[in-house]
Image 1 (spheres, rainbow, N blue to C red):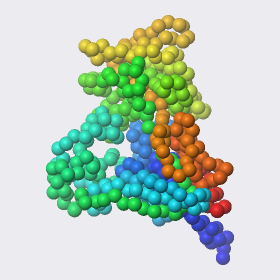
Image 2: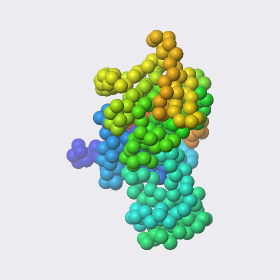
Image 3: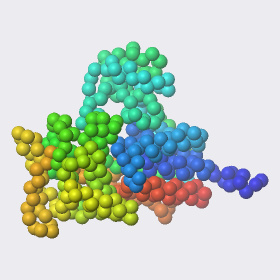
Image 4: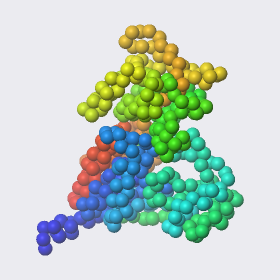
Length: 426
């Protein structure tokens, strides 16, 4: 037997990855491509996570298609990977090297015959909230999650089951791809290690009573990503939500809820750079627009980010103002927004009136407030704590702490190695 054959034979045992965002995809691929069986579980109907909602991501300002398309192809072509969408972990028993896991898979009501023709969507009448676009627009009850969805297959919302819309969707489908009798399924897995890559969600801006999220022309940073995206609600045009007018002045409000003991006590790490990135979105469409960024501290973690920050500062129409925003007001007639702050450098009170304002809301782990199965530990803020001493149970990406995409990928690779070590030593 050759050394290569011996190495291949030693790769026994399986790994469960919970969460199909960029961290979960990376951990899955790193482990599978060196010979281990991996089960990937995602609660949404498609893989990709938050990255799929972005216009661009650092460090190269790539569109989501740049990285996700390659990863989806690698997953599709790797027989060691089994993935489940619309799936959640129900229970975990056992210990490192020998976990018994129960997965619940909710019905999609669409089978593999789907060709994504879209005729089921055309016949649906009801309008439902579009969570992918943060409810800025509505969607139909038969829908494709987004244009890069993987698997590339439509979904029938449970909200229309039993309605005329569901009946019309069945009748419109020429390929017998819609099955309204689909039921939930339970899958039992035996795995040696578990990686939690459960990701994050934006902090609920409605909990911040002084920053004006109730006004039409005040949006969050993730809503801005969708506005700027070509597959977003405006086709990539950054316009005022109240009247679809072009932008001449815009404000970015940093630390919206972050570094605040009443909301999120921690820094969300990447919000500063995300807002500076979004300044470039505005500049691309509006070369003469004035852009105001109100910040507590600008944090540019790393050489590339520092270089990017310096480039932004060279723009004579981008005004970086050190000062915590005290209040955001609306003119009821014009729907213009006034941002009120105190300049921490000069001590003067500032009132800047703009067309719209963007709140840099922080990152909240999806595990916050949730009771996770198995012996999973979380810190007071809801981030998962890896059991590095005992092994077997690990967390990665924004399930651990706020991270950018490149750091999430690096961390996911490390946790894949930790999971492999558990398999090897058990």
